[in-house]
Amino acid sequence: MSRFHNLEDFRQRAKTRLPKIMFDFIDGAAGGENGSYNNYHCIERIRLLPRVLNNVVERDLTKPIFEEEFKLPFGIAPMGMCDLAWAGTDQALAAAAAQYQIPLCLSTAASTSIEQMMDASEGNTWFQLYVGSSLEEGLEKVRRAAAAGCRTLILTVDVPEVAPRWRDLHNGFKVPFRIGPKQFMDFASHPRWVAETLWKGIPRPAHFPDPNKRQKDGTKAKGFNREETRGKVDWNFLLRLRDEWKGNLVVKGVLSPEDALQIRDHGADAIYVSNHGGRQLDSAPSAISRLPLIREALGKGYPLIFDSGIRNGEGVVKALALGADFVMLGRPFLYASGAAGKKGVFRMMELLSNEISLCMAQLGVNHLDQIERSSVLDNETVFLNPQSPGTEDHLTKNYEN
Ligand SMILES: Cc1cc2nc3c(=O)[nH]c(=O)nc-3n(C[C@H](O)[C@H](O)[C@H](O)COP(=O)(O)O)c2cc1C
Image (cartoon, rainbow, N blue to C red):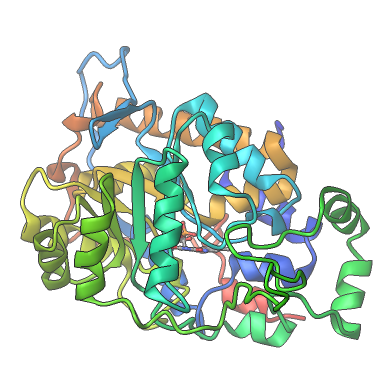
């Protein structure tokens, strides 16, 4: 594990270990990928002001949210089909959530069920809801999550339709998979990934019936359809969901302060500021640029969760300084698993925790609630090092075939 010193080390290793179609599914974003590029660069551009001569030997990284105390201020963002990064990724993430006491958000499109993940994560799983074919079907999933003992539900609202992701279109990425000559060559040149995946079982969406199996009435079940519209979800549905779900309700994919206020007034317990890691509206603003505006609109005290573009511990601290109560990371966990499986995930946890702790020392604080807006310098002229790992131009590199 000593070879992995930063996220880019994991990303580069995952890029060679995974079939291109899988790596691109994880790494890619909507359209020309300006949105995801912008997320990362806007965070890197933020400068933090070091403070000195405070005794900072007793640093404490615990963070409460929803009256629960987590050992770290970050968790795992919901991602569908994580096992495509490497067979066993869901189990590795659950083990990390249990060991480090962090929340793990489980996607509706996950290939491991909410019941199994609640168990494996020792109760640290939050369920993320997509509503596709019917509102009623969505509410059934909510009841299932409640029955599994899940305490926090995330309704994702920034995917009314799935955005075109050019890399996926070029690669012929589809769920369920179709293997033509191009995909065959890709898989054939990654035999270890194929062997592991076949050995552990090809991932399929665990919260949907298997369309290949007959139902009791003899008809074929309707399975997960990734392309199906999710545009039915509206303010009335949010009210219905609030009524149905007794636990913590989070609404994910919010960038507008007006929407945030309305969501709070519809009874949500937290807002999750995110642009889906740039995977939806390519022209959306960076999520980090919206965070302080949403915090300002909501005032102090209302829980805000943040993701999109965080790639290191300093990024987590920046989001906290700009008003987040809790930070999630998406792709980094899949790069880590793709690069080195469970060991990779645990190494990344170690790196991120260390980076946050070291950053706190530099800012002169022992507790995360001492990180303030004033730690962030406004109007600094910033030049990013074009040779810094991770600052590379993803677009140029990824389109070199
Ligand atoms: C492979 C992949 C699958 C995703 N699937 C979902 C999903 O099922 N539900 C959801 O709300 N967000 C999903 N997301 C978005 C993440 O939850 C998160 O918003 C995003 O990855 C954050 O950006 P980051 O990857 O830069 O950390 C997915 C992201 C990736 C990379």
